[in-house]
Amino acid sequence: MPSWLIAAAGLCAAAVAGSALVRDIPLGLAFVAGCAFLSLVFLSLPLALVVWVPIAWNEFSHVTDKAPLAGLMLLFVAWIGTRRIRGAIVAPELTVRIARIAFVLLLVWLTLSISWASDRADAWAETKGWYLAGVVFLLITTIATTSRRVRLIALAFIAGALLSIVIGLTGSGLSTTANAIDLATRQRFAGGAGDPNYLAAGLIAAIALAVGLMASARDALAKLGLATTILALAAAMAATGSRGGIIAALCAFAAALVLARERRAETAAFGVLAIASVMCFLLLSTPAGLDRVTTFDAGGTGRTDLWRVATRMVGDHPIVGVGVRGFEHESKAYVLQPGKLTFVKYIADRPAVTHNIYLQQLAETGVVGLLLLLVVCLSCLAASQIAAGRFRAGGDRPMAALATAATVAMIAMLVASFFISNGTDKRMWIALALGPALLTAAGPLLRRPAHLDSTER
Image 1 (cartoon, rainbow, N blue to C red):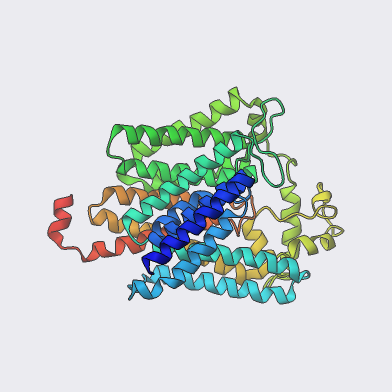
Image 2: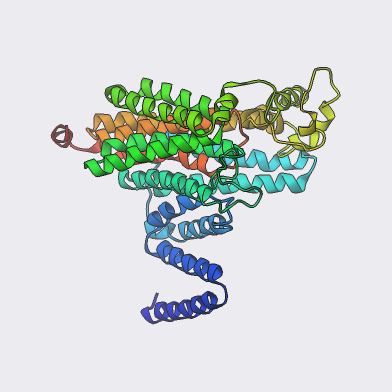
């Protein structure tokens, strides 16, 4: 592009920004931020992706508004435009290919299910969310192809979690509910994620990645910063009051102890520290929160009733389901069947999702849709574990630790998904995409000369 054209575009953008700042400061700042991000996309697509990840963490906040969607579309268009510039691309590993093909087939099946969904408009709106998740998965698995880029994505994920906490504490609010913690009313903390349970799932994954990055921290200040971050994330997780989050955290801790191998003692220490922080916060700041996370009665969102209805629905439509987004529309028909339902209002009066991604997928897209989703998730887990082994064999201990941490982060998100319907949650797909990205980054290690491996050891 000619330099004079770039200069002219810069002058025009500066003039528009100045005019917007005079009339409406928030609008002007948004325009400046958009111009800066657009410039970054042209200068470095990988770095622009890193900058976008924290924004995606807070897509339901007034602070970011439409920025996550607009940024993702810019990244996707730039990705398409730079494919010819990137030239020949190394064929992906078999596990990565399986994950990508399964995701494409899942999107095809979701699209087909619109034809038998009861409300096609809602079904299409939900399917668009899945397509956006697919774009996120594609971008990370094809752009974050080096160890440095994967580390930056992991850091950006942690930064997004911290940004979400800051948005919640400042009381900036969401489009639906206020989200600042209120110690007087014991309000559950939702941060910038829009929902306490969704926030908790992401925070546990961020904690796992922060522990994994400790191995690559080269000075005491960096280690102290990561340790402080882990404490802050653990405290925020406790403030969400999420029972599903607590279960996911315990499962992640158990997985970390099994997978950590040579860093088991350090992993256990950080796990105990995080759990202690959660318990102290629950006891000292929100005493009622401890009762909530330790009491699994028929309270809350009526998940058990929703799950019972979902199983009834699966019994009638086991293969293809009722169509994407069909659970909310079809669940009313199952209220009068035999069996006690305590929270009928969440089914008949205010239809809700199943609060379980696997049951939601099974009820709406049948066995076919659930199997495709599981293939994608299991392929990503396998990819991160294979990558950990290759990094370990290549003498790259810090990246091996990060690959193990990525596996733990995925496990945390997938366990938390038993209590939330988060199929279109971009944060989950960012975490899952780290597996294929790590395996791609670890690929060249197999072709390195043996003397280099022995030197690094």
